[in-house]
Amino acid sequence: MNVNDIFAYGSTVDVLLKIKSARTIDGVSYAINEPYTFLNNVRVSFEYNNASVNIHASQPLIGWKEDFPTTLIITGAPSSKKVSALLFKKVADSSVVSRYLNNMDLSGGELFLDVSAKDFFLYKDDVKDTGYTFNNVSGLFTITDYDVNKKYRLFYNETITKQGYSFESPNNAYFTIEIRGVGNKNGETMNVFMKLSSCALLAEKKTNFDGAESNGVNLVFSIIKSNEPDYLVFE
Image 1: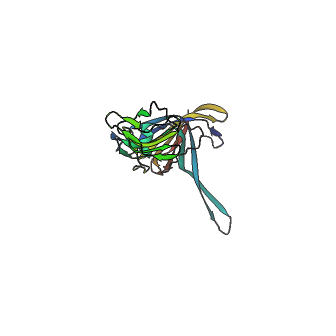
Image 2 (image 1 turned 120 degrees about the vertical axis):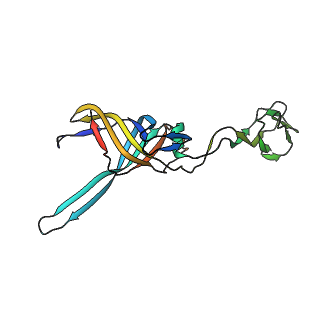
């Protein structure tokens, strides 16, 4: 490699996460170096820790600076089952969710709900109304004093057979991360391959409901310095 070579790389890349230490994730056992998940067409960025030390002597002044990547950020990873298993702990195979019906489309004051429905709060023209019955065998909800000229709102809870997750992160594994993309060496376009031998997924995640379109989640890894080489190859 010539010390005057100029390297450039950008755009999106493909990322392979491989198991660094044998472990079980989401009930599945993985061996060392076994591929865990492949992230296609994501964005990757690095953060660096800059340490500067100046050594003073009578003659001359020596400057020393060390730059190395400490953090790897993958942006736009899909919210897949495998990615979710890294970020959230499973807590239950079923979950209780809240339902809300506004200006309900009623036929004679009746509608069918799931048989697990409970904890009802009915409002008629914004006034709480207790004039209703619920059949937990058929799921028939009936407003006993139904008035077609009134507006109704209904709040209730329902049990669904969907996996529930806590906001607590699981014990994060170490991964080897391999990145493939397109780079540029001295003005020539070519494939680029990067390998980071040991990375720890940080318990750092954000959940936003801001109306903006989202293409996935962000994964933040701490890059661990080890005796194994981390390297970049243009091919």
